Structures are given as structure tokens and as C-alpha cells.
Length: 468
Image: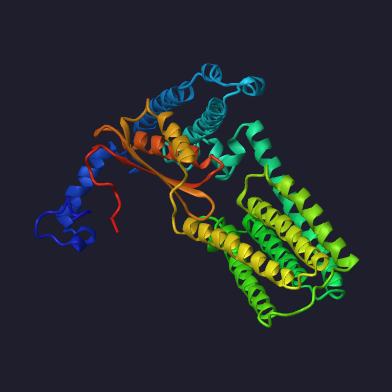
């Protein structure tokens, strides 16, 4: 059993800690032994100070470890020629001159791949140096930190160690995401009030469906706004309750909203069927207030949609999808009753409302299923896996190989597992420094929430996890 390797056969584990009183003769013998070990004593019983060789030995060990860490840093920080990679990039002007769509698409993907590789290299160059310097801050165990790397300085917030251009890019993305969410909240409040006023002037079922859509839009943006604030708060109480972060609140909020949206439009679909069932009725025209409300919704949501598309966060992309749906939905909500009134076709409005409800139910059911699969541990997409494999390649000069690289969703973000191969006789300190540096570099990528690195010495050993 682990932990009992050094025990004598038949001896209990408790006997290791058991105290046995010594006889007087034994005390005298042990006292003489201790006296001879610690040096001769003076007449007053004071021991002469012994040479401080242990301090020199600690200093020598620290110097050797520093040299080994410097070699490790040098190997990692000089592993790529960025200028050589840039030779393969096609500029925007070059892409415009390519007429073949397949060739143009290939070079666009190549440019994106180069961007991923250069981002990985920038993270390694920024994080690896500070991560290695942060290891073993008190090598001589005297209570004084002789080393203090960047990770201690930033309290573990890896983003602070990234290059300024990367930090600025992420700050701008976060700022744009907040602006998009806030503008959505204001726009949905205004449109909801306008549609409530318009609904009193018409009994159109398509207008009712549009009013419900606006009410649910406001609920969606409020859920997104709330989860965004909860994720951003760095309160000690929340950190204790959620030790690995609160990023999964975001897809959970979208999941809850998707379910509410599907249930609500099932009710609109039911009302549409009830209105058609008598197989008779009168065509209703939309009043000017209703037409103005729907037209304003189409215009405002269209502007917000195009503004949200470039912001690649799950929350803002959900809002972009919602705005796109609103543009289609409100356009058809406006056309069905207008065409029905002009052509005197009474059933066009309820049929249109039913078709729109089916479209919304299908669209948000897909969103619901997507978030469920991500929360269940769906594999990361191939592009991101290749990016993470490239990060592994950046460490190829300090490891013997990689057994596996696994990346999967834990909500919106990605968790990644690396299993690296090292020599059998690799020292624990070196094994630790390599593994934890790789871990911090992986967590420095914007897509990765958490990384785990395990070490192995045999490529044929077990995978490290029990199979389901």
C-alpha cells in the first residue's frame, strides 16, 4: 500500500509515531552522541557554533535550479521564427486579386491559421517567462521569498501578463460586448412600449406574436446582462462558492431563455390554430401605429444585428441571432396582415402567425440543444483543437512527446487536457515546471477556461481516466 513502503513487516502504522521513554543509561548514551554530533561544549554548557555549510549548499542548489530554469526559458522563448511564418500570409489586396473561390477560401483559412499560431506564440512568449520565474519562490525554505515571478504579482490573473496589444484587443472586445448588451436592453424597452401601444389599436394575431417576441427579447437581454455582471464580479464570497469560475452561468441563462421562448410561441401557435378552425373570418388591416412599431423594430434590430456580428462572444452572438430572427419575424408580421387586408384574405394573418411561431420554435430549440450539448461536454471544434496542438508543439523541445490532447466544452468555454511524456528519471522540479508552464500558457488563450496537464514516461500506459 502507498505510504507503507518503508515500514518493517508486521509493524503497525501507529508505531511510527509512538513515544517510548528511555532509560537513564540510554539517555546518557544518546546525550553523548548528540554532544559529539553538535560539537564540543564549553564549560558553561554552550555549544560552539558549527560551520554554516547548509546555507552554502542551499545557495548552490538554488543557483543550479536557476540555471536549469534559464535553460528551460531559453528553449521555450526561442522556438519559432515569426517572420518566417509571415511569408505565407496573403494580404487583403492579394486575396481580392484571386478569382478562384476555392483558392481564395484556402488562403483565408491559411491566414486564420497563421493568426492562431502567432497568438499562441505571443502567449507563450509572455506567460512562460513569468510562469517559470514564479516556481519555488522560497528555495531555501527560510520563510523569505527570494524569487517572485509575475503570476504572484498578478494574483493568478494570466490576462495581465499578456502583451499589451492582446490585452487591448480583449478589453475592446469586452467593452463592445457590454455596449451591445446595454444598447439591446434600451432598444427592447423602447420597442416593447411601442408595440404595447400599437396592440391596443389592432387585434392582429401577427402583431400579438410580435409583441410577445419583443417582451421575450427584453427578458433575454436582461438574463444576458445579469449573467454578464455575475461572471465579471470578483467577490470573495462568490469565489468560494464557485472555485473554478462562473462562466457556465452564461450558457445556462441562454438555455433558460430558449425554453421560455419555445413555450411562449407554442401558445401563439395554439391561438393561430383556434382562429383558423371556424374557417371563416374577416381580413383586418393594420393601423398606422402598428405599422410604425413593426417598421421601427425592423430598422433598429437590423442595425443592432450588423453591429453584433463582429463580436465573437456567446452572449453577443446570441443577441445577434435574436436580432436576425426579429428582422425576419417582424418583416413577415408586417407583410402577412398587409397582404391579407389588401387581397381580402382573412386567413393569411393567423396562418402567418402560426408559420412564424413554428420558425421561432425551431430556431430556439436548436439554440437550446446547442447549449445542452456544450454543458454536457461537447468536443471542441477542429480549428481550436489544431490551435491547442500547435501550443503542444511549442513545447516539443522540452518534452519527449504527447500521449493525447483533449479539448471539450464545459459550458461556453473550453477545458483542455494534455498528457505529456518525459524521461523516467526526470526530476520532479523539472516535470512540475514544464507541466505547469504549459497549463498557464493554455489558460492564457481566450477560448480556454481551464487546462490540466499530466505527465507520463511510457506511451503505452493507461489513458489516466476510467472509461464509462
